[in-house]
Image (cartoon, rainbow, N blue to C red):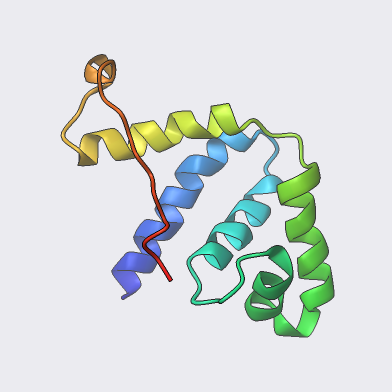
Length: 109
């Protein structure tokens, strides 16, 4: 289990490089951690309550700012995602043309 947590942290640190300002890393880690929690609702309010129950209001505000207000580029974040995922798929950047990623989370309850 610890190995999974270490890999998740390494992945988020890898993505964090694309966010610009270092203060956004906590928002990324909080939001992504919330997304993988077994919650019935994946909005920032229940995520905040689960991640930091003693300071849920402050965590809610922080997560909401990260998602809705922070000035970071989703296009810039997708680049490190490709860097991380393509080798795991046995692909190299030069092979990227002609491949498609289909991400469909509708199979998850």
